[in-house]
Length: 201
Length: 184
Image (tube, rainbow over all chains, first blue to last red; front, side):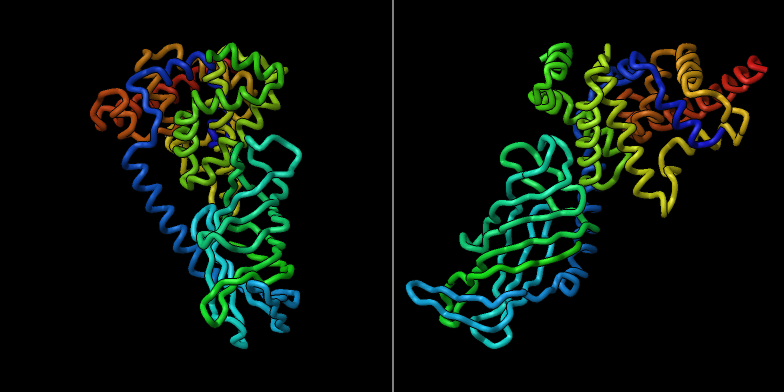
């Protein structure tokens, strides 16, 4: 008997027998400690594998000239901005903003928790496939706004507050407007403009 | 909320049904999916996919036993995902089903058995077992619990579980052989 036939045979077990098996013995509704350790180890290894290559792979150039605003003054720079995207965890992405001409201190690093508002067609209870737009919140309390967040596959969203997470081996594009950056004097200001950041983990 | 009320919400297209299912069965569903998919993100995604399938299936489906129905849906969604994800690398031989395959051999004649007949075959086999044997068999080969987990759940030593599973595989082989001879 082939594995496929066995699989079909087993998956057709009657509901009453499944119910009986679920009730038999001690009910366990949590992941066992051993499995939890395995899962944590796997997650750590996966994170290490994911993070290592993205420093290079996540580097893209900005596509617009920025206007640098600080307090009441406006600074305009012709320099392009480089953004490095690095996945820290499943819903945390770290962006490093860099300038090559010393217009502002670099690199400036923000970490962002992925939050947003689902605009797809189906209920956010499920694994949805669509766009996410809204704002990224920064650990620094100041950062760029995300005009549009696009994914190509498998973003899982929970209902309120509609948190999502980034999955490996997927293409992501962020269209962002306004990037926080650090001035040479150490103060933080917002770089006005619109950038498209593409990355894949 | 009891399962009949949840099904009523599903029939009324009320998404609160899914909140109730999550509140009531989240741990169980996570365990089933995690037994099959080692990556926690994949396991979570499979549960989400299964809930979407459930939402699309009920109505018109009206399961008598919602818990078993959901468990089956999550389990099958997880196996499908594993099969899809690993298609290029390896088959689902990583699941304990390969143990059964090894025990039963590669009998092509069994391939001719229809899906419904297969369900009847396994139910007929299970009917002839004790309650303890049925639970052990299904924990291992439907829910993919590990031997140590089964031993802990059922209050047995691991060696006893292993030897019992060995005997069950032998029984299944004999049962299927008898069924095939009867058909001829």
